[in-house]
Amino acid sequence: MFLREFRFEPHSGRIWRAGEERSVRPKAAAVLRVLVDRAGETVTKEELVDAVWPDGFVGDGAAAVCVNELRRALDDDPHDPRFIATVHRVGYRLVVEPSTELPRPPADRLLVGRASALATLEAWWSEARAGRRHVGFVVAQGGVGKTALLEEFVDRLGGIARGDGVGSADDPDRADHLLSDRPLVAWGQGVEGVGVGQPYLPLIEALDSLCRGPGGEVATQVLRRVAPSWLVQVPGLAEEGEDRAVVPASPQRLVSELAAALTALSGHRPVVLVLEDLHEADRPTVELIGYLARRREPARLLVLGSYRPAELIAREHALRGVLQDLGARRLCDVLVLELLSTAEVGAYAAAWFAPRAPAAELVSQIVERTEGNALFVAALCRHLADEGLLETVDGTVRATAPLGALGVPAQVRLMLQRRVDTLDEADRRLLGVASAVGVEFAAETVRAGLADGRSAAEVEDAC
Image (cartoon, rainbow, N blue to C red; front, side):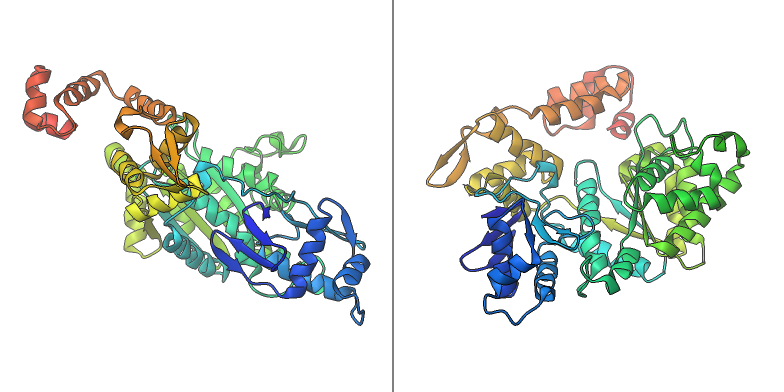
């Protein structure tokens, strides 16, 4: 049977996730069997002891130890349980409904081929968690999977923070320590055509997510005390009269206030500040990131930014100068994400179409059609499945026709159309002529087709 993404074999007591076995002792497996049999009900500690240790000679603590072991195996958080909830002073309850079918994750949350990238992010996190602030950037073209990687990393942070030590809500001596080591996460994003008009918009969004998420009360208190100029910019956080009491701050004061607030917050719990799509962010936001990286005082702070390198070049974005300065001082790291390989696309397709296996020619066609762009791979797999464009023979799935004849997924078509709409009229004419010439074309051929007076060199630059 399945518990979300985990497969549990009640007869053997084995637990699996994505082909990896999570080892638990027989007694812990027996506790899970009892909870599964009574899913949704509160099982008292006495009932667990009677069922798993019928001969007696153990106390309630034995059940708590087994539950802790199960939580580690299931990557469960006792403070925000996805599987086993503690009913205070009574017992435990399985909060997930067991199923006979493995639920298929959303296409945008199936992550393959990123083990090395996740290990790099975890190394950055370990350094920041030890009190050495760290700034890192995840770099890739659109659709390669920057957001999916960052979301997976943040999802894992709870388990990383807890480490391998024994401790949970059932272990009072460890509970405070565990809570103090769980990160506070602030998440903001640059938005196309929006960030330029309002300074610090991604940071305001990040502070909003921080103050409204787990640990938000502490974050709000710190902002009220250390960075009131930022507090009044987050809708709904300032108390009545506070917005009028705070004198508008200069840019220098805004920068120093936020830096001091993040440092103060990191004294309570480690802080992870995620800022996506910095190629869409305003100059003050990226310059503030540079300021955070150059601060010398210790802080349990990890700043993660993402951007598309081609956009920085095309726009002569302010982030280019910040990156050059931080790189020269060795104050930041850059993680470059590559397109998915054929093997990684095959692993994605196998997970998406499971329990059916994708035929080798289907995987090859997906790679040829998408070039390993993760967003396109996901959209194409969804398109083939949703539109009934697949056939299954002896457990192997194939396309009903060559992929080029089966159309472009709506998600991809809309994304590409939006990109085309941002081009000026001259570039749209160039793109139209080039598409008529063929998949491969010479600049001179396109110049001749345009007949608008541009030289071959100008056409080459435009391409």
